[in-house]
Image (cartoon, rainbow, N blue to C red; front, side):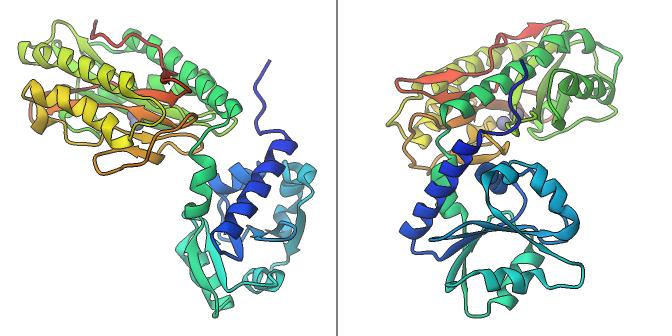
Length: 373
Ligand code: ZN
Ligand code: ZN
């Protein structure tokens, strides 16, 4: 049985109702949401972001309406919007959709636009509503999206299992004499073959490239004795994302690499073990960082420990020093400490972890010990 590509109508209706009550509580008059993860979360409509305006107009009180270009109307009707009963307000090529949005609001003194709305749309809405204060809808929607419901956690488990199946095949492609790019192509094909609809990123960072956390792929030929950081992810048909890193070694690892890999493994485990409702995001970061610093590698762990994940690969909560956000059941995020020795090599281990009622649950289950090929 294949998983549904969008939540049931009743779930979407409940999300819209919760968003409206959060909008009222924030003292806002309306949310204006263009295509992207917020629109998909609230309505199930996975609209393409285009230059023509598509916009959910969600007043604090009253019925939601969706402004759509006339030529997008059939696609919108075929989407979950059709069952949701939200009125579609179509506009023709010579009409002004921004004035149309403004005309749909009985009160529009304080409106909030989605955080990823294109600047040209934000500015044209401002021009159409010169009296309105513009705010970010993220302040309202983060509270809904940050805690995943059980069906969303299930979606993250499916994404985790799919990317696990890709990692399981990596050893057959990672060989001395091949380039990072060649290996990356095999991995990208497998990301799609294992059930994702898009390949979001493929990092194959061999030897000294492993010391650059966001290296992608290059024409470097992998050599015997190279550690290789493989960090990969994609988006599933239901919109939920995968993201998993394992570090491999082609042949026997260099001695200085072997010395820190076990430190990294212990740090990643310490952070995962620390996850529980009531602990702060920054304390999870600290749990990993302490282990690495105590072993003398603190200066070589140059990024935060993790990021939230869901309909976006990077979303709240961020697992970083200074973030005092208290973790709660349903929050999902990566735990991905790394150690990077410039000019030499690097390593990272990453799992997606969901905070449960009593502790964290990893959705990536591939072995984390160094894989020597
Ligand atoms: Zn990653
Ligand atoms: Zn990540």
